Length: 435
Image (cartoon, rainbow, N blue to C red):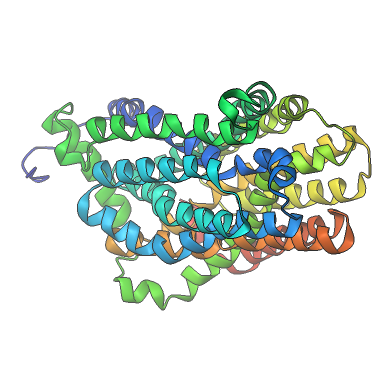
């Protein structure tokens, strides 16, 4: 095992920057593509819905519940999955997650009843549990806090890129593959979009290093620099046990904040195609092309905000302000009626705000958690916050069935985002997270 005390640490800031840049170039492209395909496999049901509901005679409420059941499985298995990643190692565990979720995502193509739809969505959540918080935890092994914000932002740029690529691709698959091999377009959507996850899982198994000490491509001096920066950073953090994490009010505050932001994230992920169709656009491929507009703006906003947050070392407003922008976007969508232009404008504000707020949020809990406490804390925050992934589509689907309109559900989402911003500004001390 590598001994961090065995070498002198004599290095300037430029050399340290060069070492961490090399680490980023080694891992971030792989993790980025992983997040792209993960998000795509999670929310492509939003596009499949455009054909799937008529094909299987499902209601909007059934769709909303099924879409959200993913997060029930995700909730119950998130913490144990992240603890296993910490013990077994990122390489094997992340590869396992990707391959099993791909198989289950592909299986969605053959559901034919509400119960089958509910079951496969729940199992998909079980399979994917641990993936994103595991990657956030993995970054804590390689980057100190002041470098990690940009890395998380780059990782989560996979969200808008997934929308940029996945929207047109999903629309094209559904439009072009319908009837091929006796399958509907929505069935081919699940089959084709699951394949990259299997390939990537195998690549990760061969390429990822679990820890700094395992990296044969780094010199002993470079390992020392990385470990020394991380050690200096974690000296100011809470080295809590798993029990301490589960009794920490600060951790549960993070859960509530993330809950409101995720309400917005999955209102977009599961309902954006439906919002656009409600303005009179019927062609799935055109809907897919229009979704590129919000995601293009969101990608730029996320990267700019991540760099600005790391440069200024300010964290709270970089989460709260985007959350408020997203809330205003959902209000505009709710009031836009049949106007495609206003709906796209509202979706652009909502998507840019939510997608910017999410990576900025993760700089808050990782600023005060480390070690085993971080593994449990990140997983608890992520899985509890992501229960909004169940509540958001289920509530919107139920309200749409009852009121025959998306507006009421979108107002609920806007209020949730505003509450998250308020909680950050009132109860998260700047001195705790601004570093």
